[in-house]
Length: 313
Image 1 (cartoon, rainbow, N blue to C red):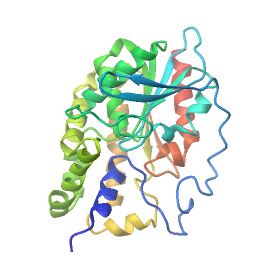
Image 2 (tube, helix red, strand yellow; image 1 turned 90 degrees about the vertical axis):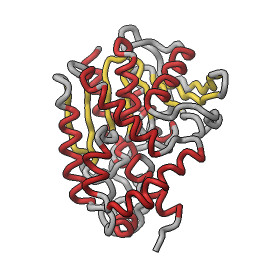
Image 3 (cartoon, rainbow, N blue to C red; image 1 turned 120 degrees about the horizontal axis):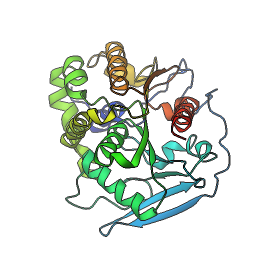
Image 4 (cartoon, rainbow, N blue to C red; image 1 turned 120 degrees about the vertical axis):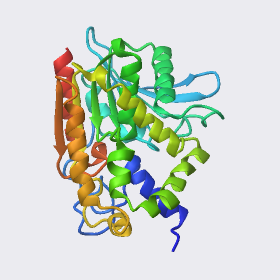
């Protein structure tokens, strides 16, 4: 029986970046990563919070700037996953802002930003180019430490490939594997489900200005093409223990289409290979975390960013 659009879209975003759906009482964090989560503490009050809308000519982008600039200390820039806005970093950014200037933002069609202009490129090159415009307009100090979750992990890697002299380091927070189609989708997804339902549901992202399946595949390929630029870049790669937490309703709903256990194992292997691309790469599996490590285990993300800061300052 054909699944509803909302069900299919939930599956698509759970892998690419949105919050995976968890609801069973046996889940240690119950309804959501933030509920009864022992790893979350109340973040400090923002340091020098400034909210600005940057006019790019065709649309305005919301930015959230916290902290203050220090001489010879990078600006930390946060890039959320597909479908997430700057609030994805609510437990991380205020803590890092105690040490340095930080910037998060809402990509177009998300949060407090304007809708994506018609014809605007939503692949990683287009998004990285737009982020560069935003940072130039804000005139925040260079270089940057880039922190990207899920598809945001590929967006920041493409940014680094395009502007290598402006990037001091990268933290990839369960970044989408840049060989996702070849190494995850085709081997581990039921093929009828993939081509008849998953990909059409993915294309629906275009309708709300987030890009379609083709944009995602282009983004992965673009990130893969820039792998050589990671050669000696400080790089911290975090991989979630599971893409979805055990016993979640989403797990049960898609078990017949996707082999989640095998995906988790392969995902870790591929993330470790990415970290090994840099002589200064570090790989860590985030225990007790699903895909949204920034919400399940913000402490681990904070630690990874802090380690990169320590390396480059």
